[in-house]
Length: 121
Image 1: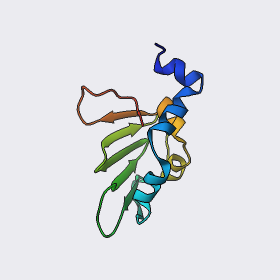
Image 2: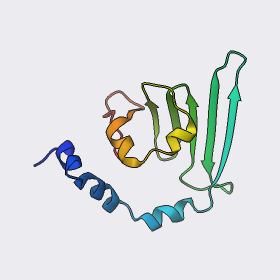
Image 3: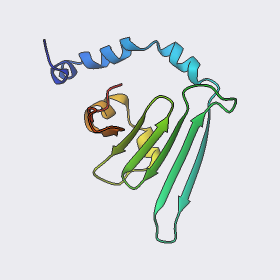
Image 4: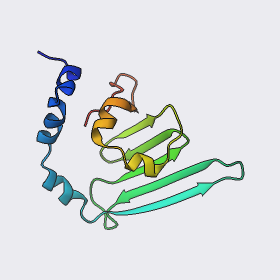
């Protein structure tokens, strides 16, 4: 059996992730969501970005994203995790990343120390 890295190098990993989800069903789950964005900047230059992504009428698949420096904190009804980068990032840059980047490069530290730290969609 090949490792995840070997499958990823052959391009098979992306197909596995795509096959795991019905994209139309996923899109339908988010169709009524409304993002709310806030950017706060302190006198010391510290910038905090906060994005709430949820359906205003309630329901499933809501998430809060808080970015401070090179760290993104995610909390929602699907999972909780902390992502970190080695250099400064902002929400616009993060939004431009594709799933393959997250799978291969970003460290995710979920709640609980016994959980694998690699993001696995």
